[in-house]
Image (cartoon, rainbow, N blue to C red; front, side, top):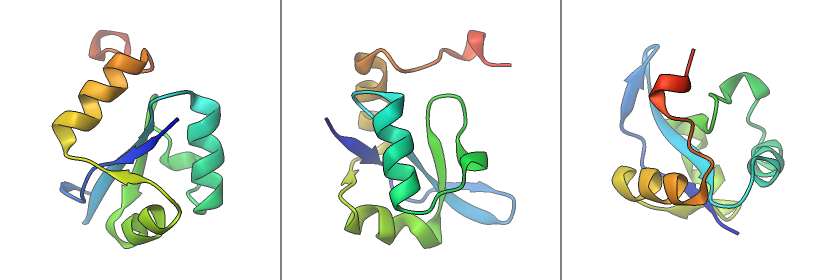
Length: 88
């Protein structure tokens, strides 16, 4: 079981964001997000959006840093990725 995070790179809403995913389960992902005080509203279908000022806290709590491409590959391999066609 691994929680993965990509580097802050994605601009939106005047901030820069990372993505936080689990390669095991949504339960693991939600539990980790609660430990690092990410509000539920930051959950986006299959990942959490993490503001750049929370990136270090996620790493300190045990998230594994990976590049964006690897994060997506591992999320797809886990079976937890929600394809774009299924997003509303």
